[in-house]
Amino acid sequence: MSFDKLRTALSDGLLSFPITDMDKNGEFNAATYAERLKWFMAHEITAVFVAGGTGEFFSLSRGEYQKVIQTAVQEVKGQLPVISSIGRSIPEAVEFAKMAEEAGIDGLLLMPPYLTESPKEGVVSYARTIMQSTRLPVIYYNRSNGVLSAGHIRELADDCPNLIGLKDGTGNMQDLNDTIKTVGDRLVYIGGVPTAEIISEAYLSIGVNTYSSAVFNFVPDLAVKYYKALRGGDRETVAAIIRDFFIPFVRLRSKKAGYAVSLIKAGAALAGRSGGDVRAPLVMPDAEEIGILQGLIEVAEGLSE
Image (tube, rainbow, N blue to C red; front, side, top):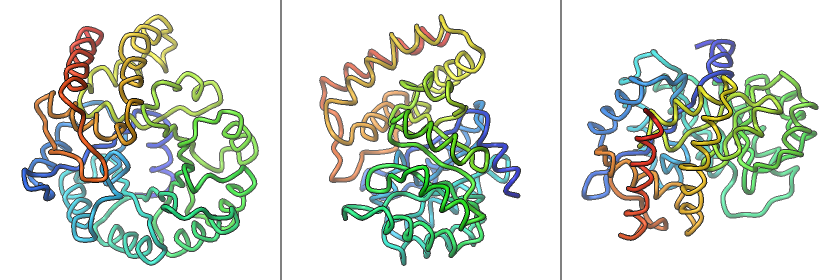
């Protein structure tokens, strides 16, 4: 897929980030993952991001990553762009990128470096080295240890022609607006804070038209309805869904670190599409929290009508 076609797909429409299916033994389940992707594509989405944060990229082995991306490419069959994550150490990121090229992945999401605190010039060097090692288009995930300023993002854009997008994981509207106004339409901008819908109105106001929807994994009809209402200027519907579903969901998510992923897997199970449990160091919600989540799914069903 050309850079231009991928940019177009990422510029307008709902982006999906499927969980990674695990069986009862905690191993990757390609069969149920393929079914999940088929189910995703039956809804109105414009791209599929596999092995992402919601897909537990951080916990996958090299072999599992390869199976995930191969399964995704085989199942999607070119109907939508498929983007996979890369990251961790530079050698690992380069290896993941090569695997993605060979599998037929359309683009890459470069995750921030893990654990080690780093000077910004070092993060720029990290990102530049990885981007220049691949022919695939890359989206930079501006989050955690990898947060870069407008000037640094412009430097990467100048040095790396295959950098096509910035995914914001900070929610810092001031800095993001600075980057958008500084770098301009050289890049596509994607909302990427956990439960991005909660600040999607702010994103839209500064020109960020798309975002990653993790809750799509268990309330896809609500996710699509909300996105359409947001883009259509239906403020009443937007306010109702934010108030009745997303605010209580975010409150539940905020109870424990890692619940941005764990609650999604729990929600998928409650919706009849289990992908197994998360891997340590993440933990699954307890029975009381599962009950709250079940109630929110029932609310979502009513809001989707």
